[in-house]
Image 1: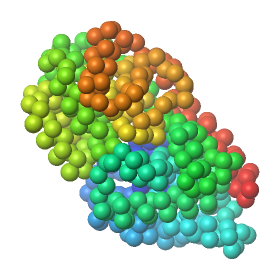
Image 2: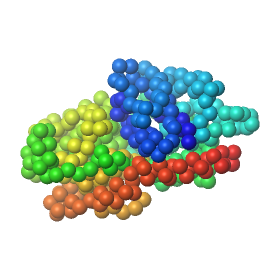
Image 3: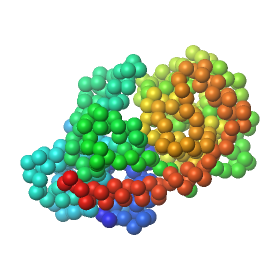
Image 4: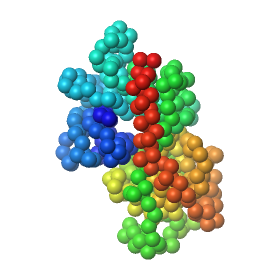
Length: 399
């Protein structure tokens, strides 16, 4: 099958969604599919990743934050039209808002020119979040919203989402909650909506020996008897990393916090200020941006992964922790099935978070059913579900 993937985040760097479509592409190539990619690209970012030597068509990323809808996505639209004159894939699989003008174009054709050649190739849109739901949740929880997000980024993201559900032959959602919200806010056709959770690479994310853990801890700067609490990912207001820092105050001094990832400068400043005011500088190690292939070590040296998020789709970072055999204490979503080693926060009070952390770590509840995760949530298993969505799309793209 010939698949055209459209995704803004593609490595390098390994920011945002980049690991998800990359791993998905690698598994599809391994399964015998032919994949070509349109993606965003920073100049001088390094040699672009090409799993299976696929063809990648990079487009310069937005020059200023929030301008993607008038810059990179416009360039993508015209490059896509030129590409389609000579190419006819079996499936177009798009992720997120990069393809906003392609969604609008296809919706226009469906409405006025349903016989157009463009529509002979079905479009599948992958929703990793629902923009309208994020906006509503931010307001409900009284989270600060920047003017740039309120008046530019989110309105255009919602515009993109609405045109995506109208123009797609099928929509993939990483959680049932996201699927339901798309139906509620956008009127998405449930017949076209499919729930496929994120996957994990069990060959990359795996457990290691105690000796290797001790060595890596010392290399990073932890003592072998420290209790290491990990948070990994893009750090933003809705992730509530500052509450995890505050929770550290209620834990014994041997508990250390390991922060792996970057975020916007305003929120990172808030985290730094919380660490300073709380007198926790000697108990927090922050590494900043870490390339995806190097992140398994962060899980392997940790006693517990904590994600006190206000809301999520299905965070890939949680599946990575479980695959490494690390218990995970999370909020903002629920997995579709129970997995031993996965715990859910009922509220985000720092004292409550601290107590739950202490209970898990000190009680010896460290068993994680990583074999189940590796078997049921590998990317190879995910693409089998996605192939079923492709078949539906090909058979029902004019439903």
